Image (cartoon, rainbow, N blue to C red; front, side, top):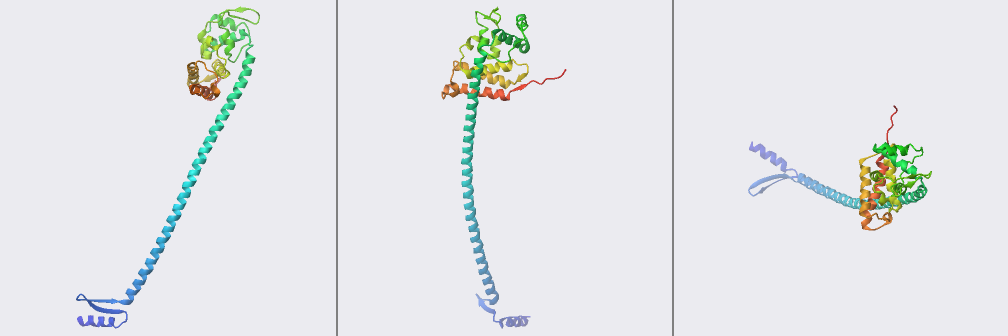
Length: 281
């Protein structure tokens, strides 16, 4: 067996690529060609790995650049969004101011036109409100209603407040009427007592009070609790401001609450008032 092994070793050593030598009293046998091939392959792999690392580093740089671009773009989008939001707020504010200005302009004209409304028609307006809405009409109210067919369908703060004057009022035919004494009914319509109504001369305030009276006196309209709450908040803010005027375009911090309540009421007119559903009998 040893002889065979020696022959095999000798045959291997006869080739140029094979070698046999003693290392630390141990014999080592190898193939130089294979080692050289392995070394070359190792160099190739190292070169390839280095190339891969270079590619990865390049990708990392590109990703970093892209990330920065995305971050810059995101900031630009955020800035643009803020500008759009600011512009939208300005447009909304301007629209509200235009709406309020138009409402006041039209309201002033309507107040002037309604100032001459005959007192007996205004008297009938309150009596019909008691009959149809409150359900507590008196015999006097029914008498007033039965005296004519002309009726009013909108609130009129000053004209209705005059019905409560101590001197009473004179009807179209010259008949003298005694003053009304159902102050609580007037307050349910306008939110204030008749005595305070005569000192209110600011058109935006008058329009709110008359709009409320128009809505709550109508048998064709219904409101939500939110509408009632918005009106009560406006009345409370109005009283707290000592019935201030000029709050629509004022920068006074003391009038901000009143202005907010004013806007909230008109928002409620749009969203919290609807027509009653009618059913065919």
